[in-house]
Image (cartoon, rainbow, N blue to C red; front, side, top):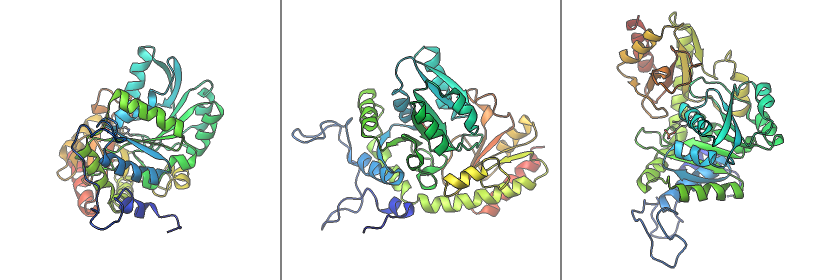
Length: 370
Ligand SMILES: *Cc1c(COP(=O)(O)O)cnc(C)c1O
């Protein structure tokens, strides 16, 4: 076939064994720590068929070559390790708390310096880019749901000589492809939407630059944060249905955002799909959908927000996101969450249940929390 396939077709068909008689339809996880000498595999830390199948699929989706890791944080750490000792990183003030904390630890030990900035404010980012070795972008951001102008920031980052990285976890490779928008490296917590069933911890990095790919691959084999074959196999199994899961989760999220907006207890809703959301126009320009995560606030009522999370019966009160089951949490319950995230902000990871059931449970929790 010569036509370019739609991502929803790629997730189903990429990373399969060659179609020859008797071939299996799926690649199997290979449970072996080493391989018989004479081939190119060598040792289990260097490669596994289950990784390769998942990497082929993610690479095709994002427009580059992928490397899978033991977790999203392992993937992020391997990428951050590209920064030279004493180098400078510009990162979002509201990036994923684990990434912010890692950068802070590195800054404290003198490994690098870091400047945090509002990535939704392109001019503010440009002002601090001078001399940066790496520009770390997350869009939409976790959990503030801010949207960064990826093409404009990638261009500005390159002008400053920085490697431009995008944490694409919230958007997924189906809704946003940062390499095609100008970024050098894409990072995923595949734990979330890619695996999609809250049963795997896994990370991935994708780049179209062969030198960057080799440098990151070297870090995977030397730092050793490799995925297990079973995890990679489960993540690919989950990825096969990403298009369908997202379709439902996303329409549920849009429905819930509208309902929350009308609720008297809710003071603010952040979802890029809402026409009045500050990130709406940018998201519409660079994403093919608005995703399944949203955040809302209760007008400063941290205690009530905590209670809402404890009062739901269907929604799971837990951290993490991107699974088939809807989850919610008050992010500031974590000590490492950035202090400029409001105390009463509740993040919703919308799943694939029936929208009426999801709303009935949220409405009930909002009533019982006050
Ligand atoms: C969860 C998450 C991570 C970290 O990934 P793990 O798989 O938990 O290590 C990084 N970035 C974002 C945006 C996340 O949501």
